Image (cartoon, rainbow, N blue to C red; front, side, top):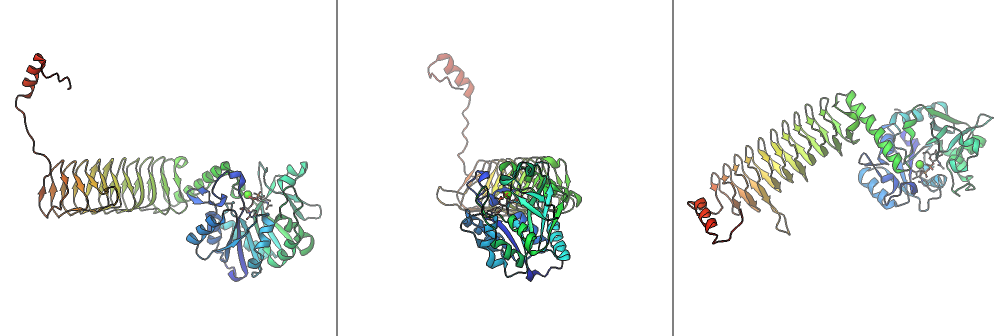
Length: 473
Ligand code: UD1
Ligand code: CA
């Protein structure tokens, strides 16, 4: 889009209390598909090619500010110390927006707005040249929203739900809270906004009426998709918008080749990326900045968070994987848990009831059953027997276990870290390994077996005589 980015600012209002959410977290940081609500308007503005973005913070503003600073470099933060309404918000930020010719204002709690809608709004505003353009939409249930009152002289006025008269409450056209203003006109109008209304707040929509009365034209763009402009005010809104966003995103991915067996039970975060040909079974959740490559498959009821899954790798469900980088043709699960920085190289296998933490498993290595491997490196072609545990924690500190290539670790081996096994070494089943094992060696560390001859006969005799009193089996 060809917008002179120097002349246009975008202000996102995110300072409000969000009382209706009943939460200790500010509303704009409530989780929507595991991203804060305010992520979405920021992303839409960014994707629309808009720069010069600022977020207005206030209520629990430190939390919002640190999110913005960490995740959105280049986005400015403006403080509204007292939250006296959306009109007051624009008064407080005046120094910032008055350096531009035009300003777009978005509410931080309108997460479904599309980038195409924002760029369309900018284009119409510049093409038609009014002092204000804003979005409205027609909804079945307008309660809670500001109603767009069409005046006899062709102008518009927005009446808030709490101030509306009975016949105004019947109006189904609502203010979406997405505006473009000429800064010059806004500057005059905002100074005149008062707070004589049901809640004693300065309403930004009042400025629109004033612009229409005194400064010039106001355009309303009626948006067809009413779901796009849902404001998130309550936990119910949060659930509805989650579902809608998820539906929309899965649809987009499926149009690009994603195979999703049951889209209704699949949940995907907005930063997840897919190659063309990925298959998801029912009940799968994929979050964070995960990336799934061609030919990979995720089994039913698995959760992946910040996972890179290589080509033709298969996760058999249910499995839970986070912070992991998985190579090509790996097989994982069912009932596997990978977390805290696991690297699984090509053709590695992690099987049933295996937990892996902060470990590197090299090419073709196998951990097929019932093991805990933490803070370890496992060499290529090594086989870890069932029930093996890396004892990595002494109650105070964590230590590493290093296992070379081509090793055979017998079932039920306890590797007491720090410890290492050289290449092509092995351990006998049931061993407790406390000393390093040299290359090519076999370590046995368990008590020697004793066989007691004629055990059953002896037992039988003693039971008949009743002398030892042992009743246990
Ligand atoms: C607002 C509009 C309403 C519209 C609806 C669309 C006003 C007065 N009303 O109502 O016409 O239909 O949005 O969703 O604008 N905020 C601040 N500082 C404040 C107050 C609010 O930054 O002092 C922020 C909030 O964090 C929120 C946004 O502004 O992100 C909107 O505030 P909210 O209280 O949710 O307004 P609504 O009642 O939903
Ligand atoms: Ca709202």
